[in-house]
Length: 462
Image (tube, rainbow, N blue to C red; front, side, top):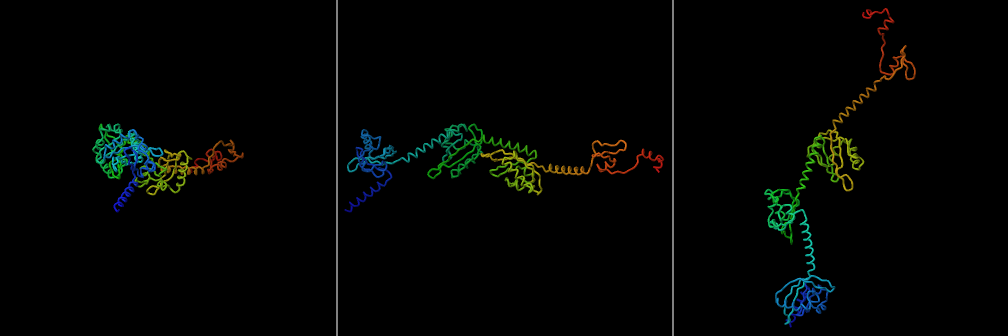
């Protein structure tokens, strides 16, 4: 009695385990009819157990028909206890088809032949495989059409994949490169740096935008930019993914830009002007070396911010200078121009003529970048002050001088002069009123002889 209870408990336990399995279990007889299904198989197909036990394999598998089942059964019998696995589709109760992986084994139970199948619903796996296939296809298309060279390295640093762009850039076909390391692509002088980057990447470090000198198949050299990323699977690094870009054009453009900037800086600073380049977005300003030395500072003593310029402004000029900046920013003036004083390192002030113009705008039409010059006009201001002082002195002198000009009506007999009101005045009275001249009276020689005929030169000389 105890043995029967143990057997019953054992069978109950097996039934419990089978019905809680994630995989479907189906047993068919030699005619292909279901004689057992577990709960998972019922869930897979959407039928009740009673319904499935009234059905055959051909009712759920479109590849099985009553006509071809005998041959399928013979293959199952021939396999014996060997287990074989294949993929197919099963039709569910609502008419949809789901991908299935079947593991089938022939068996005999209570003297009756049967087929035991482990049924795995592989919908999720198929979806993942399709997504992976699409991803790999996209990657392949990108890789084959990209101007950049994409590649994969194994743990030893050898190339296990490289995109077709390698032939255009380096002159090698992909087949020539597979299973080689990095040495064909670099001169010996770069081996150590490249090897160090590879080793660090294999330890989990990402390297972006490393620049190297690279070597083509014809032994010519050119600059490249390389990025390395570790390839991780199941939490472990299994290799490296890399991208190499030919940056020859960029380097040439950068050199041309540097040369151009050097020329205009030389031209401007050769003329004695300092240069400033302000970015409104970052509030950063580039001040040239001559801009700084003009005020007695070295390169290290001036920060590249707008605060520096504002702090050096003379207190009396600050408000006007900042107002001119605001006026220009808001488009009220076509060019920024301001004369103001800036404090030198020794505490003195220099007059500066600042000019600037917008060379770059934001997408909203606001000034983004302004480039300008600083000209020392202290000497000009000094000369201007001296000039103004001289003019003032001359004006004062002229104010003290009265001049006679024009035609003076004078009597030919008595020599009186007619004034502006029509009155006749003695000559000395008129001149006295119209000038600063003073008079002293005496006799000329002719009048002396006429008035005093007895007067002689001898008497005058005694």
